[in-house]
View 1 (cartoon, rainbow, N blue to C red):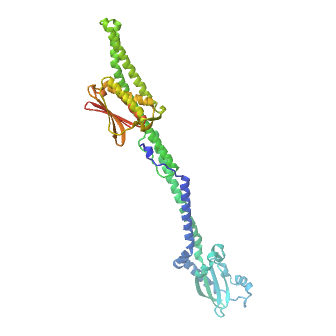
View 2: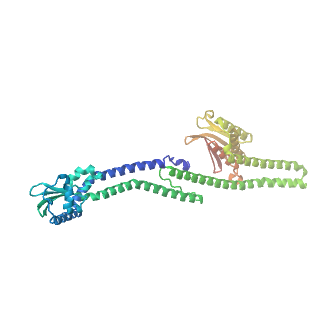
View 3: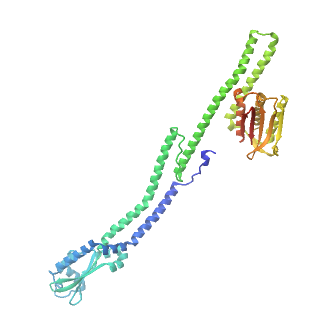
Length: 455
């Protein structure tokens, strides 16, 4: 299993994730703003009873009115004016009441002797639209103070209701809006910052990969298009790494093959050259020339067989993708093995065929190539013909291993295979097995060479 097959496919989206964060942030920020707005009167009440600055301003206003009232009469006209003209007269004859009119304070003046209303005004702030929803509450919770005013013509009761706490309401709500907006934007900013930081990291790792570093994996974090890009880059890294490793192995195998084939060709070519030189110079006994020619033909056939195996090796290893397959049963391969066994018997070998399991090859179907199956069988049995000991029996056994059915071929060797040949035939046989999704392995131990083919 490759590294790519182990990865889980990423199907998320940056847009969807961003919408989720926006919706959640909007819900939290709106809830926070509503909390601040619904608790605005509690904050105002706290400030009214726990803030001395507001009280000091109110007391200064009362002291100033008390100091100014001594210079004026309560009824400067000598009689009470009509209610419609009262405020106009007060502004003319009691200017100190209106000269420093406080939009956050309401006051009323009552004659102590008669108890009648003299003058006053309502705080302008109560008439402003932003406070209409809370005006009834503010009127009940206003900071109310009563005191005496001394006029030239008598005393009066001054009732003051202060709403100076409303001056901070705009700052309070402005801060609440700013905090809620920050609460809305902060998760989005953090998400964008993290994804951009992650994208920068991917870029750096991609540059390292472009520089030839295919060992360090590309970091895959999250479940969106950026993560998918990182995953695809990591897939590319794994693919390149596998391809380079395969090319390295192929290059190494080809070098070993060329070295081994060169060694294999040197022996028959040297022999062939020697016999041809004898014939060309007329050396030796003429009656031996026919024997020399036969040996030359044998060495030529040996060289031709090597050339055929090299062609087969190239076909199998470089043209595996072009192999045409058809539905076959294992009886096709088993027949090739039986033919190979008969050929060995004709050459003087003793062949023993054993089945340790109930095996019906006609029932086992697969996708295969008949020509390659024949080459697989020929390569395996040609090794026995070249290196096998005719005095020891050749064993062809059907067996089971790890839940798989297979065929194992054993025989005693006359010489060590690694030193005697290039191994092209066995390598081609293994490649043919790989093309059919089988496995083929061999080993030589105590002079006994065995090949195991598992289906």
